[in-house]
Amino acid sequence: MLRIFTFNVLVLSASLVATALGAGDEGKKSSPVTAKAAFDRLKTVVGEWKNSKPCNGGEGEGSDVVRYKLTGAGSALVETSSPDTPMEMISVYHLDGDDLKMTHYCAIKNQPRLKLDRAASTADRLVFVFDGGANIDPSKDMYISGLVMNFHPDGKIVSEWDCNQGAEKVGPTTFELTRAPK
Image 1 (cartoon, one colour):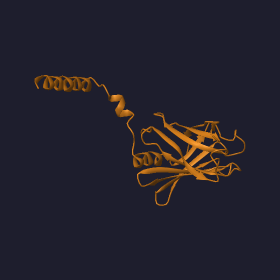
Image 2: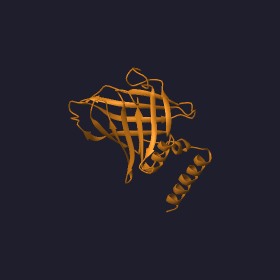
Image 3: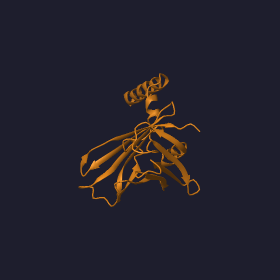
Image 4: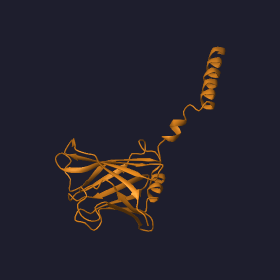
């Protein structure tokens, strides 16, 4: 009995020393986020952004623009890529219970749905995974299959959009966004 007590005291002491020395602090920075916290983070991007890597190769005026606006009394965030061009695409982010979901209305005429992977996400890195869609046969069609949004301390956002052709990954397409001057 005394051995078990001594062992428990040693384990507790080691744990307290490690905490005092800062061990495990990296886990706090990378701990999962709630869907609500992730959506609140997304709401901070409202406005116009310049994309240094336009999706459609920079063809046409406005192809380097991404706009974010809230709609539905703040219940949905609408992202518009390449507004007012033939390649305009819309993505709508919204809470669905304990989940954060997004539907992407793609120029290839399908509508993949993505869902926040809370375990893989942090406050500064939101990871979305494929969650079905409309007008998609995942066994053969091309579709957006994932998204990672990285929020940098300098205010830049880097978004990596994964794309699949059937089961084969053919992406990602990367957007590097900086807030447009007002």
